[in-house]
Length: 471
Ligand SMILES: [Fe+2]
Image (tube, rainbow, N blue to C red; front, side, top):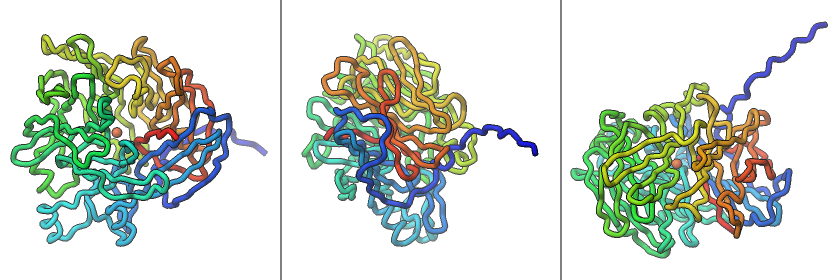
């Protein structure tokens, strides 16, 4: 009898894009290693979890119906709960078995009559699957439509629209205003005279206040923005839309955007106190989703962003391509130094490793010079398979990687009263392609050594962002 040696094959991440239907609550997840005793509170994440509705399948990773996931840490134990975010979009899918709202790259089924009606009263989705924030005692899940959804962090039940966004598009990456503990965010108002806007929502306030506005004819796709002590930083990548197209093209949201590299990348700075803008400061065309951090260095403004060479990544993230394992564009951590005195922008790649979904020690370092950021990447053009730490002072990267495992955004949680910027842990939900389930990984944020992991009884579909709420 002969035996044939098995050729090791790379474990596919594709089942990380499988829908998850079950809502569960587990009091004590099996834990290996030891959770730090100071880690008390909850990691709450949102992300797409269901891409099939009735006999249709959504087109894009960003389209899936939002599910909340909560890992709670207390005295070394970890509990887990997950629940669909009960939005209009989710209820329509569940009760009527159809996609009723236009998602990022998927349109609802509409008759001609419904299409015409929708032009005049668009049914914007409230499928808040991108990120969430804690504003005072409130928890708010967000996407890029102006319908932020408040939810109860204990029950994970949705509690309606959180506030009115002063515009038609917004970001799911607001910043904290240190002075008021309020939330700063961006909005685009679209119409015959479109404008970029920034607004402030203090905790407890019913309505946001617009603090800056700027006219624009072809708004750029905007996923996040930067903040320094003095400035709101808008990076206008040349992936732009003609506003009437959004209303009248009849195509899903993102299909209306066009890559126009001849426009270059344009930085605008808005004074946080007066709202006055300066710029644009121009450099070559790029694309990016995520600002990492920004700060002032004398008259210069330093802006770190995870960038791509172009907007092809949007195409790369269509589900069919992801499930087929097609190559993905590579994100890199890039520093833009805006010299406001002479109007130039210098660009520099900070580390060689790929990196996106960046986090920093936010409470300590946002708006300020900093040294460390953590994100995810890959060694090649395949799916994310490593956690990356960047030392932006020494321009060095280090990596956590486990064969067959696919980590999500590493959320940094600072150890209370620690002296060092990187003293704390990273919390990342990892899909284990070998076993088909996910686990919550706890890494030492300084060394990237594993501290502990907690096994989840099922897979958690690849998601985007979350926040740690101290208990
Ligand atoms: Fe994001």
